[in-house]
Image 1 (cartoon, rainbow over the protein chains, first blue to last red):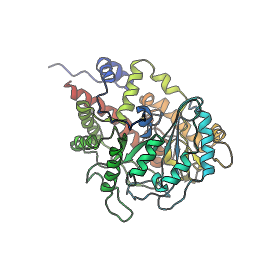
Image 2: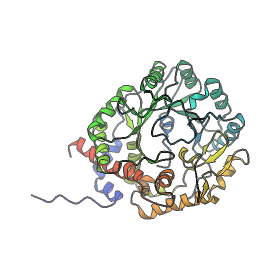
Image 3: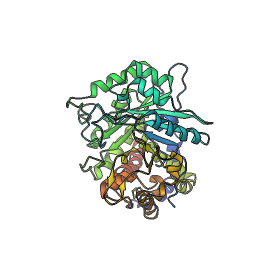
Image 4: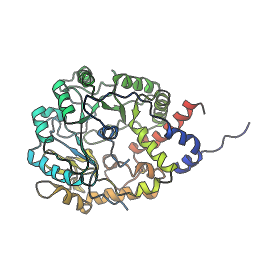
Length: 58
Length: 367
Ligand code: SF4
């Protein structure tokens, strides 16, 4: 039985080590059901996400 | 290091201090008294926001207390003071949902106000969100959400998770999906403000995030705010932009209290002070323009200590490019200092989250 390779120690090395599968993950289409906006109103998803206290500082 | 941007892309306001609920984990110090923001304070904030929006979009988040306690006329009066510059000024309310009715929905539509409802899930998840008389609040919040849905208003939800039970993560996900919200933010219970209770701090949290990620990957009806954050970092790391992104000046995230007091780094520090550092304010909009207040903020001792804490994280932590140095409020309320690095909050909501997400997506994929 082969030994399981050790996971990289830092986060950036982990991302690099799993580049292929993570690229696929971040490129995955957004399949969430869309909620229709009210007539005559355009809601921007980015604004709404900011409304969820989604500050730019991570 | 630790540079602060001179303008803000998100501004939090406290139009009113009172909340009609009395959640057991709430950290807001003045939530039992009614103090409301004056038009003069709103005007002072609106002047700065209008100037900033010449450079970039600005989002104004009406926080609280419970902002809808103000009533429709009072809220519209304050909101009406804001004017956009060259870019959009977007508005959003962070509400417990219990006061939303058709009249509020019409306000949200007319003024294009985004809505995020704080709600913890089906009973017993929601049992800490009680009325002032100690009664349950879920039915009232669901009535408010029914009104949002009648008016086809998209809304987000934020849930506090007291017990991150991996076996119930799927149930929570499915319940919020069925509720019809477009995104869900998850706050693992924290030690913050007036709430002294300790948080859970063990590997169950990783297992919870992992179980949630498995559900999310298989379904994806619902966005998970924390996974969005994590994946934005992953995308930046893959593109080689992560370092540069992490070095960008930090958004000051000002929070303006009902009386014009200004604090920074989000809403959590408003109304608090420390014997060592004094009040966690950087000024009052009655005394100076908000832009000037923010430009001078780094001279305040407590802000300096916050920036030292961010720098310490940058030096010490391999998660910095994802986390940007954590939440100052959590650092302070957990340790009594801002110039520290790891906290229970960051272990649960950054490190274990990332680990759980990665584990979950691989599991969902059958890796
Ligand atoms: S994960 Fe914790 S220690 Fe690391 S940067 Fe964030 S707050 Fe600092």
